[in-house]
Amino acid sequence: MSIWIVQKQMIMIFAMILIGVYLYKSKHLSDETSKQLSWIIVNVTNPVTLLIAALSDREKLGAGEVGLAFLAFILMYVILIAAAYLLPVLLKVEPDGRYAYRMLTIFSNVGFIGIPFTSAVLGPKSLIFVSICGLVYNVIIYTYGIASLKAVSLRLHPGESGNVTSGSGFSLRSMFNSGMILSVLTIVVYLADIKVPGMVNTTLTYIANCTTFLSMIVLGTSVAQMVPKEVFTKWRLYVFLVLRQILLPVALIFVMKLFITNDLMLRSIVIMSAMPAGNLPLMMAKQYGVKEDVISAGIILTTVATIVTIPAVMFFL
View (cartoon, helix red, strand yellow):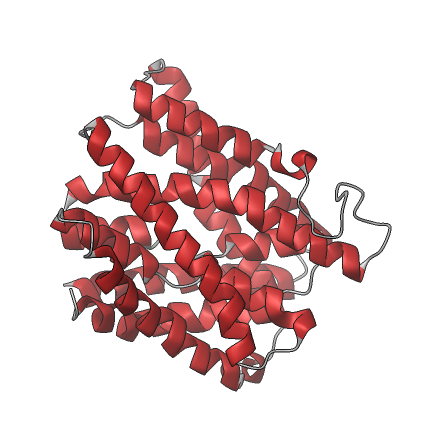
């Protein structure tokens, strides 16, 4: 059943990517338009998607369980960030290209694939853990992720990244963006169990529903500019695939078992860690003018390999 769920997601994903390829090849979508769509996805539709999850009427966890889940996902991302600096070194990636592997390591597809897969395999109750993962994910990507890519952009285009105030890329100004603000708002809305009028909820839902299609269209424009060998002949990505998509989630199982007794929480965390690389870093790389070919190839390769890697990880649960 789990394999079939993944296969269905792959069919939908690649169908939308192919639409993006067609639109770019037929000149109905340009590089400039792709960058503009990337900005909309990063700053508007994706943050609203997260907010909608907090506004849902799904069963709420107790404060203690919510706190434990937050701590567990924070620990998961601490481990992923540490691994993100180690893996490129092990793979002997050139320093200028290591940011791509860091993005692929840390930011997986916890939304489009993660939500339906976890719901089908673990049941609707698991979606609360997916939502908490999304909260932590968004806080990290809209702070650490943006700051990191801005730092790379500053090195590549000196004088063009005015929002970055230091070489490290971390600045208070870079942290205050729509994604960060809505991530914090989402946490408040969830914990306070705030309700909004139906019309507001419907409007936000319409906005959020644009995210998957638009992001896959943008990914399709990148695919259209690549030849197959650029995706499937990068040997480092195959080694990365085994290390990141199988060995790292399996190692996470043994770490999380040390303090998590809630089986549903444990399974949800591990499955989230085993998701393929997400496309939001690609959107951000386009926005900041950073080379994204390795990120695009990594997204495609890890997504295709999901049919094998996720069942392999689940075997150890």
